[in-house]
Image (cartoon, rainbow, N blue to C red; front, side, top):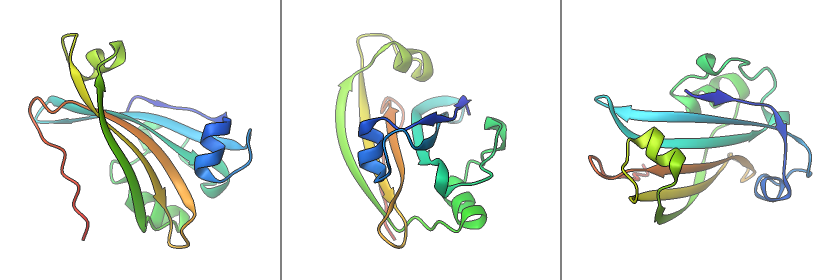
Length: 139
C-alpha cells in the first residue's frame, strides 16, 4: 500500500461514480508484486458516502479489498467494466514497476458496480507484462 487520501470528486470522477461534483471521495494508491517482482500500481477511488468508517490508515486497507467492501460496507461488486490499452511508461511507472524508459505499460481503467448496478469504485491500473500476463477471469 502506498497512499490513502480524502478529497472531493472532480467532474470526471463524479460522472463515473454518478455522484455530485465536489462530493467526498476516498482515493488510494497501491502497489502489487509477485515474488518480489513488480507487476502493477493502481489508484482506486470510492465515493465517501458509500463507505463510512473507511480505514484511516493505508495499512488497514486489506489486500482482499472486494471482500472488505462486502463484509464492512455491504457492497457486493457484481459487475466490472474495463477498458484495456497500452501506453508509454511515465516516471511513476518507471519507479513503481522498475522499468527503464522508454517502456510500454498495460493500462486498465475500470468502473465496478454493486448489485443494484450503481458504480461504487473507479480504478486506474498500470502494469508491466515483462514477467507476468494480465488475466481477467469471470466466474
